[in-house]
Length: 336
Image (cartoon, rainbow, N blue to C red):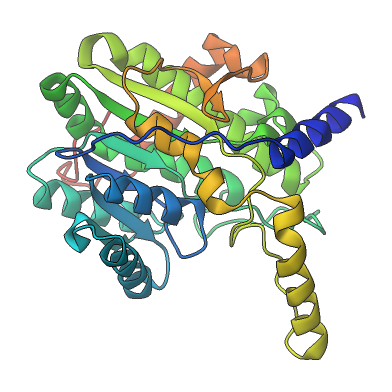
């Protein structure tokens, strides 16, 4: 209960006090990928801002790719920015073939250069009525774990050679992992074993705890030799398409949607404010890697997220899983 009360107090404070904003950085010449950039999402805002600062941005969306691209390009045009700074490509983090296809396309279309990867895409299912029965993806993983962590790890593994090379050439490459304050709902022991009693909120927390470990391990492995750094981010409690609850059609559903839209600004951050910490971690230099950022500054993550032995073990198990995805001829891609 004290933890819940302190979280509520911090959230109210975040709503009522001035919102920190990332300082504008000239991102010209920087190649950036932002996953999960469907309209009304944090990824959309992150991609839009970075492209408006001059970065060459590839955003991804699982659905409605053409619509997302047209909206982003229109936003850039209206702000007087070159619309060619951004493109949107399909990517489904639950589908290994989709991830491989995206990585293959990117490697062939950007001269082997990638300076920033923002692992933003994620899901949070059934906020108000959490699942009690574990939902599985087609390949047999719990859906939050597969989407929020394993998919991001797989994508990063395929793009890592580009990030390392770009870090050596430019002196600065980054992986920004969008986590959550709800990583405190995860436990290290649950990273390696399914929970005895399933709850969708704790499953979400488990996946976000893994993202903090992921950031710390990237920093330990690659910062010194390759100038590749990683940061984990809690964007705040933000009004996005992920936090919207599906409502039934008809008058009742329309009424609830109207009420939800009216109440959202009173209880949640706007997406533009929520994107600021991610944008800062993707752009500001110098910036300390291997840390957990909230409201555009370093914050404390849980003690469990700081266990280096667990971070290493999680990396090795995830790497072994990625190895199983290699094609029989061994020619699919270079691994971590």
